[in-house]
Image (cartoon, helix red, strand yellow):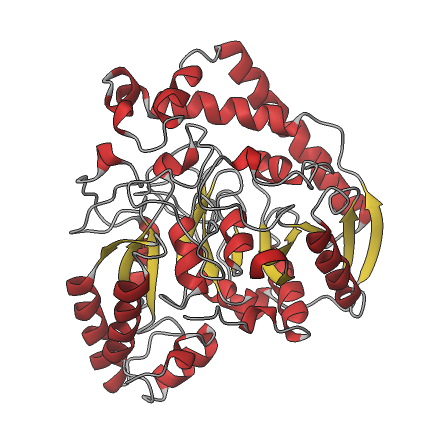
Length: 470
């Protein structure tokens, strides 16, 4: 029997055990699948256990390692994938009833992880259609509301609900999530894990169901910043069958060196609009950062309508992607009542508005790049989310009245132009719910973000905390 505390270890420690043959890949996969069966449904995190595939891949990994053919730090490592990424032989449902029996070939990221020797143990829950139809409650998937293991009465965050909860409760050592506008960051914050949003084009989306062709990004959700680098190394790079990808590999060891004294911009007003405990923990994290980095306070983003442009682009592209779902009437099979009507508005987005929004992207990207270059900033820092997790029942808008959601529109800006970011746990607030801090970087600087995150986590232990009862 593998003890539960072992299953909470970061990837580097698990990989060392696998390589030294102290941990057997088959036993490790069985241990995580046992936890997935025990806790996954209760947390609304599990869609499909890929048992047959997992055992076959784990046996292959065990045999190769015994024969001296060790592939690297993910060889024999179990993982889960958000259920919008194809996995041969299993449904890819996107949390949506109309796609519940759909089957797709392996997504590019699943192919790459298989090549690295990783073991797929589960398809993990997603908010239906990745939230593209404007859900307003946690119960927006046929698997029910995702629940954070820190307090099951509260949401695990969306739309990568399952990956967030599963990593937090050690149902998997890492998972793949996706983000169009906050869908890695929100569950990372509400579930208390580390999530990395790569630069747009760094990771192939081939074989993953699309919400927005020009804004979707796939990234790892892990226990630590270093873990995210290990996974990114495996999944990054050019894919000739995904024209959005760029020929930029990522090497965790070489690309994550910490600058001598990083220069970090503190965004103006983002903490002031947060709940008191979010702000308190953010200020405490800034104090830790100041021990090894230069902080520049009250930095403002260039004045550009990031959020409006991002909203129009998502609405228009989702309208095209989901045209048949809406026109056929099958949209009425969705779980959340607001999702059954939310797709209609996008069908009437005007071409001139979409083109105007697309034209905003180039000057927005150039302006944000100048901010990093002229300010000599290695990263921008801000609270990941202004509140702790929302209740798992009820309307989101009714949850909290003590957060104004003010400050700089960094989430809209970063996702509009495809900038990388990393979110990390940094404490707890009311009801034993985690809070989170995030770094946003210049395009292609995931390594710097990971390095800063590693040093922050070296000086704190929030990423090593274990949810009670799990």
